[in-house]
Amino acid sequence: MTAPADLAAEGRVHTTEKPAKKEHTFFDDIVSMKWLVYPSSAAKFAMIFIVGYLLCEYVLPVGVNPFRPFLMLSYRIPEGEVIKRMAMEQAHGPRPTLSLDNSVTTALRSFCHSLQATLFPHQPALLRYGKGWLDVCFMAFYIIVFSFLRQVITGHIFKPLAAHWNIKLENKQIRFAEQGYALTYWGIMGAVGVYVMSFQDSWWYHLDHLWYQYPHWQMRPELKLYYLLQASYWLQQAFVMLLGLERPRKDYYELVAHHLVTLWLIGWSYFINLTMIGTTVFVCMDIPDTWLALSKMLNYLDMNMCAAVVYSTFMVVWSYFRIYLSALTLYSVYADYTLIPAYARTFHPSQGHWLVWWMQCHVFAPLFLLLLLNLFWYVIMWRILFRAMRGVCGDMREDGEDEAPTKEE
Image (cartoon, rainbow, N blue to C red; front, side, top):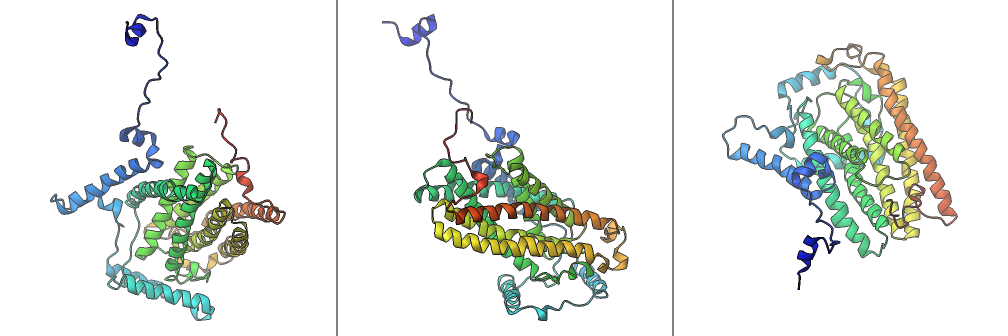
């Protein structure tokens, strides 16, 4: 009897087996940017920098560790320079009237300061950092870290939880996992943002103090870390979205616009030494998103009553932070710009001074665009609330996503 392999060789039998699919390699993932969505590749990529840092720090006799800027903050300012700058800043503007705060914000600020004393008891009081091109290295490394964390948290924590909690449809499991990651990130960064703001003169939106002590270019370590991590997160999210590595929602273009405006705000405020106003904007954005993610997760779990309560709370939080406080911050750019010291309203980048009169428009424009996007989503949120009152729950941006995908998809 002739073997099937021989018959196939003679052309009388045609095998139907498809060639084995080539597995992606680590190098392929690096070149194609797929490490953004493959946690194993992101972990290997990050380990290159970690192992390199450890080797240069503890094994090889290297005077300057080339991997240090990727893992650690750069540009620590000598204490003498910090004292000199602080003496100059005290000459302009009144001290913040934090005693006028209500009891809640006063207690919150006191808690943040006591937490700092507990967590970092030996941190020098005048530890400050400047900024420079090595900050790009730090952001690049933490883009990799966020890629790893995002895929692990969504794929290995919240997606299995979705299946365990009887969410059957694959699309709903994916969306639930994405909101789980959003809840984790925004919850943590919202709390960190409040903590960072508690050490600033503009604590809880004393907005005139955004301008008195300009330029804000000597940063406390938690402020610089917070700012660069936010930049890394948004860059990672933008790469995933623009490269089409995830299935888009119906408001894809609005989300792209939001990402680009956010990156514009982060980069521009950091570059021209307006990190204090950047912190107030971060807090306005992050805290409401935490409530939104939680309400959507409850909705996916069909816990409609709990979802309604959380969503109603979210609408109040969104109205206060993303509409009222955002508009108040925008108005401060318009009305309080002249509170900047006259010597700082000059174009001397070497002194940290960027805010000449025409720069007011460059600060105002991205904040105005962000407020318009917030108003766009605010209208959608009210429509969702009215739909829920009629018994229709869910995010209209995801309508039609729960059907089984077609062959073309």
